[in-house]
Image (tube, rainbow, N blue to C red):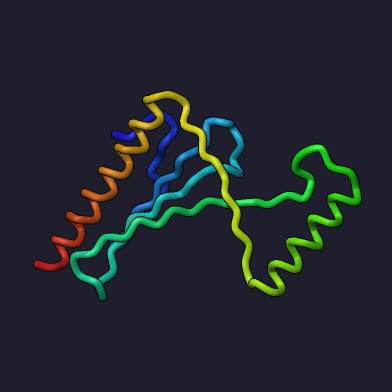
Length: 121
């Protein structure tokens, strides 16, 4: 059974969802794992990870002019390049949290494999 802050939130015929909260305590940093199989691709399992990412012009020790300049730069990048790249951290609190994450990955994989095998019979 999955424990230590990792929880199964939904289970359907073709997908299973898990929620992994960040140890920093903010709900905004949670990761959602989705395991799914698609009838169109027999034998393939998909792992989708969802996480809200953010970009802030207020990061660091900046004044109002630097904030405005950062906003202009990022707006121009989106306008001319079409995207921005952002990264965000996820904090595991101890080995138990990591082990629960690994257990969720393993359980989701096995459940989807069993459902796929059951539909192929």
